[in-house]
Image (cartoon, rainbow, N blue to C red; front, side):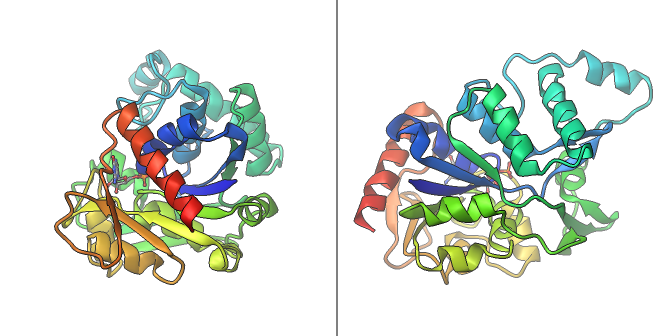
Length: 300
Ligand code: GDP
């Protein structure tokens, strides 16, 4: 068994390959939920949705969010009613958010809700939210302290970030299912996700650090030089006081990582790292990298 720590783009690209080279029942994924948000009364969990849709084969892999060939009539109609859903939500996607919202309102744990939704989508991998309680990543900008989604989706990332803040009412704790998955795993893989908005929220959940302390941990960099492969990771790294690079990425995870992987094109040299082509532009590239990670995991 391998447990992967995932956000909603970089690691899912790796998981697309992992699905091809591992038995599905041997794959556990602990997914970031710090970007979750309620919109129009429904519960969006962008990273959980992406991982679930990927494993069920319905993910729109042009955008890495939403369901392929979804329609947006409700989204357009709500706009006409004066409701600004700043995230474009398709009909099929919305059904998931409605179902999740309903189950959460009834008091169910997000872990159980995720299991039910994954079963309905025919997902056989073990997909787990990092925690069952609410935690949000907020960023301090000239518009004040705003939800990360408002910064990245609504403001299209065109704001300076002065600070990254994690907001919660109770300190988030890893669920017992997450801890059991890690315990049952030989190796933990920190995928090439945004360290600040996707991976650190997982590592910050109570129980995670002691759980991975004695595990072999492989981490893959989402940076080439001083730029992320995509998305706002560089600005967030700077705002949190980390160098926006592979070196900075490793310093986020330093105390746990046994094997660090960076791209063959990366001009920043991290001593003792393994170098592969990590740009997963298609399924073949995802599968090739997944094969290398699986091989490394056997050497740990
Ligand atoms: P989010 O939840 O949508 O922000 O997605 P993640 O946190 O999972 O992934 C975002 C990170 O993935 C960005 O920092 C990118 O640099 C990285 N990324 C995206 N595609 C690739 C890729 O093909 N290779 C690598 N190495 N990193 C990637």
